[in-house]
Every structure is written in C-alpha cells, then in structure tokens.
Image (tube, helix red, strand yellow):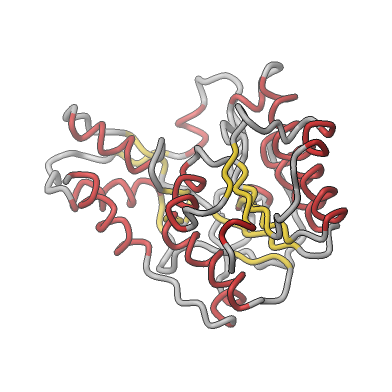
Length: 284
C-alpha cells in the first residue's frame, strides 16, 4: 500500500495523530485546511492519486450536541460531512474508512453485533447513525464501530490520572458497561483490513476482554499507578447527571461483539493490558 495514496481527515485528533505515525507518507488534513462540511470545498480538493480516505474526524462532545449551539455543528460534521466524503469517494472510486460509535445503539441489549438495527438515543448518536447510513452508500466502505477511544489527547484515562495527581477520590458511574479502544489497536485493525482486502462493510473494532463499568475502569487505573488509597464511589448514570443541564442519554450496555473482526484473522489485545501499558507510557 502506497502511503501517499491515503488521505487522513481529522489528522489532529487522537486517532488522526496515531494514523499519521502509522502512515507518515500520507496526506493529513484537519478543519483548518479542509472543510468536510462544505461540498464545494470537498469537490475542489485535489483527489488525484488518493485511493483511500480515512475519516477520523468527528464532533464528540455528546452533551454540547444537545444544545442549540452544538446541535447544527454535530450534524454538519458527523452526518453531512460524512455524506460528502461518501459522495466524493463514489465519484473517484476511493475506499472510504469511517469511524463510527457504540452510541448508534440504545444499549438495552448486551453485545451489539454489526447487523443490529441502529437505535440512537441523543443528538450526537443520531448524527453518527446518519453518517453511517451515508457512508454505507459508497461501494468501497469500511465502517468501524468503536467505543471509549484512548490515545494521545483528551480521554477518560488522562482525566482520571489528573484526578489522582490532585488526590481526588471521584464518584464514577457503575451502570455504563464498556470496553476501551486504544488507538494502536484501531490503527492496526485499519491497516489489517486494508492490507488483507477484507470484504467491505461494518466491523466492530475495540480491544478485547471482559467489559467493565467506568467505576471499575477507574479502580484499575488507580491500582496500576499504586493509588489504591483513592476511593471510587459508585453511582448511577441517572443520579450522576440529575442536576446537570443538556445531558445526552448514554447507552448503558454498550459493548460490541467482536466475532466478525476476529474471523478475519485479526488479533485483538485485552483492553486491561493496553490500559496498563498506556499508563506506564504516560508516566514516563
């Protein structure tokens, strides 16, 4: 695979930075150099030589998406922009890789498969589901559903490590059950699917291992850094957000079935191992 034939959209985000490290010869753009929500700007871009678009761009502030200011932005980026990339990919015979989310499901059943009908709860989730539909129209597409991304940037693990530095014992929800997705695993999965010429379609792609609540994930973080003296107080999602405004509904049982991606031959590492490795790197 020729790296110069890859365009990374959203190059400054957690995944975008990891993709640039994997494909240093690729083109990378972000919102300051490429407006994916402007069809004329998308059309005007020089698509010559591009054979693969990796759409790592997304509006992910799920609570702000519920506000009057955030609602149009999340739809422009997550739905309209994804649709424009799908359209341009069709016109230029380009493979489009699009990053989706567990939030397209309502979390009322366990272990979501790729063929489960979407049932998004909040505005962010609805816009992501709409983006998935738009991307699915282009013939050469991979829609990769992830959850709880951890990489170089703002994420849950770094927030909890910051609280530990301040000797804060947090209250964390115990009824949202998830698996973490680490950017090295996601990037390796993308590279594997492209290199193997795997069948196009939707793939769940998170790290492996038993799902856990955010409260238990926090306990593991504190244990890993030798701060078991910090107390994690369990609470429910409803209780945690009851006094806050503009709160997006969260899917509670949101872990994704990994049978399909494993069937391609791709090996997924356990999220607990990856979390411990991530924390060690953060502390060095």
